[in-house]
Amino acid sequence: MGITVKAEQCTGCGRCVDICPGDLLALLPQEGKAYLRSARDCWGCMSCVKSCPEGALERRLPFSLAGYGASLRPKVHETHIVWTLRYPSGEVEEFAVKTREHPGRA
Image (cartoon, rainbow, N blue to C red; front, side, top):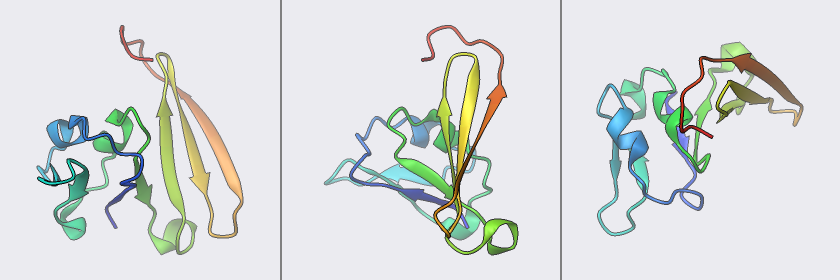
């Protein structure tokens, strides 16, 4: 399934490019926006999604997990991550997961 880049939110900071373990993200030369080189090769680890300070990346979930068009987006805080699951029906669920503290992360 891969991830989706919301170009209007992407500032081209390159954090997602640097952190992707599969080297699947790059910045478009002209626009300076992130893009996924190959969705079928994406592992779905969500490292890039969690690293994006603008929330410009989201993970599309497989149909078998949540229905066609469902997405999962994190909002990373210093001590926890809030995951927002959006179902195709429009229903939204949020889950907060405590993490280890990392100085400098907001």
